[in-house]
Amino acid sequence: MHLIHQIFHDHFNCAPTVVASAPGRVEVIGNHTDYNGGTVVGACVEKRLFVALRLRKDQQIRLFSQNEAELVETSVRSYTTETLPHWTSYALGVFDEFRMLGSHDLGFDLAINSAIPTGEGLSSSAAFEMATALAFNKILGLNLPMAALVLLSHRAENRYVGVPCGLLDQTVVGFGKTNSLIVLDASSGRHHVFQIAEAARLFIFRTHIRHELRHSPYEVRHRECRNALIALSKVIPGIRHLAHLHPSDIKAYDIIMDEVLVRRARHVIEEQRRVGAFLGALHAGNLSAAGQFLNASHHSSRSLFENSSPELDFLVSQLCAKESVFGARLSGAGWGGAAVALTSPAFTSVDAEQVVDAYETNFEARPGWWTTTIGPGAMIHEEDGIHNEEGIHEEDGVNEEDGVNEEDGVRTEEKVEKPSKVQSKNRTQKKAENKPTKDPEVE
Ligand code: ADP
Ligand code: MG
Image (cartoon, rainbow, N blue to C red):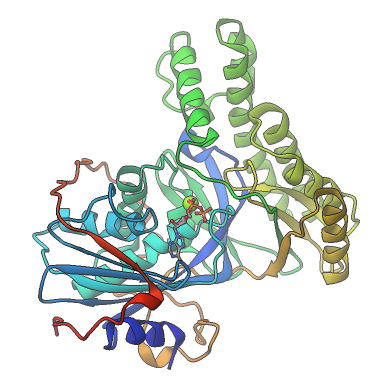
């Protein structure tokens, strides 16, 4: 039996109706360009998060995360972010979005098990949301296309979880393809798939510093970018996104702006140009040139956007000193989290261990690292297709969701509404304390 089935059965004493999974993602280039209307490039890693789901006839909600070792109970009438553990808001935020699509009032049991480290820039949050969204979409028979699930999950994170993230995470996690980069134009929500040269390898090194997006510098940067745009729009009428400016615009107008805002804007505007140049170099098959744009991106994050950290800077400088590394940069929000390196096959585990040794000498902590192929995006698992302990789907990365138009990334404007928050009793319990009994379920 597959691990997620086992976990579900152990805690809910029955089999799940639907199992879905979604991978972590790595941001390859395009740092903080997404919420500024720019282009950003990501890829799915091999590590995945699994969700198993079953509807209930009553209005009870039970959520179990193997990683948190916690069972949480609430109900359709009383779920709220205020009294429940923070991690539940990713699943409940998605559920809340589905409720706004119809009068869905049934409770559910949901189990989560994940190999994606959390808070390290690999977007475990989007994996959690997208796997949950696919599972609800399937179990409710809604047949929403992937583009709709991406937007729904993104809204859940913005609105219910309260993190003002851009669209990259959910888009890459939803639309990811084996051996391919996902290139998102965040101003339109459209993406395209860019196949990557087979000679390229990705290595990911995670610092021992975790980031927390809520109440973090991320929110401050978000505000600074908005303020830069407001200031610039006074002299450049009609601009809607920072990333759509030309580097010469900011040079001409920086006199009217706060010096900090100028640095933030300059990073975004120049990073947007770097994304194009990076893809151009890849297209020409010039991995060395592509790598230089990754290095330049990191330099800009460090000096202009100020979202790097000594640990990330150290990792990047160690990596760049290796001949077999084309380029390296921080990946994700920054302030800790992970660094990514684009390498040739000549970069091996021996090189990676040398980098880690040097890090340990400096910071007295040993960062994790792994190399990854670029894997498929979120998918529904038919029971027969799941075979191994790692939770890896044995078949090829075909997205099995019915009716999915893989290339349809059209973003539709949707009204965001406040969830109704009705207070009632919510309960949480640690794994060992309680053995739930079999409860009524639908089907
Ligand atoms: P990242 O997306 O970079 O991993 P975030 O802070 O955006 O970092 O999201 C991490 C949060 O997502 C965790 O703190 C937790 O609340 C939730 N999460 C992710 N994976 C799991 C999981 N397997 N079980 C429970 N919660 C999870
Ligand atoms: Mg996240």
